[in-house]
Image (cartoon, rainbow, N blue to C red; front, side, top):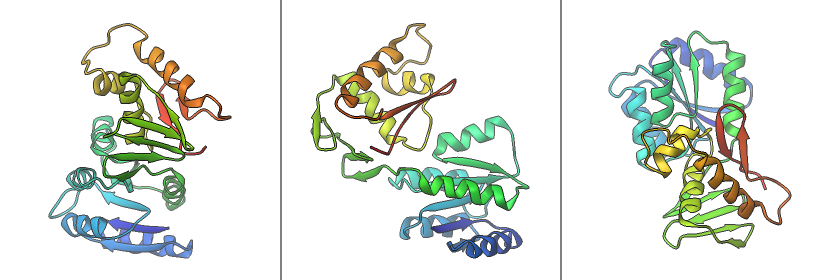
Length: 225
């Protein structure tokens, strides 16, 4: 994999770079957030490792800028702060995974390998593609393996939200906020009902379920056919 590391601690950079290169990865390093953003937007990387605290531009702002630019490269954030609120803030900004310092290199390598295997949503103008599913936001069409699937407006919006976040588990609360614009729980099974209908249409004639239910957490679009 091609991996970009944005970290201001030169000893950490040297240690991680040496280990990753021994595993056969190509590593590019940057020591401040502004240069890291330049590198991430200008190069083709499989994964970007970003430290939370960086000079010139902090890691959170870097990730937000990447996502605002439509760059969906997987991001692993490193931080010395292990609080839940900080991790949530990073994930909401667009990070795909989190690792708290100090960390074991073996865990870092395993997490990077996992991120490298995840499907990436390709944005072509207003088109989202995850695996064999293609969603056109302008034409309001959905195809799976070339087969046209007709969805109701809310089903379409639900699928679009899942496809914009192929690396993340989307919770019921997230979907209520982003698809229905609810800032409260209506105490109904509205999300489950629409997901059931969406799945029925999306999976008809196919052997695999395109949407994965993550027990106790939420839902995630699958990249494989």
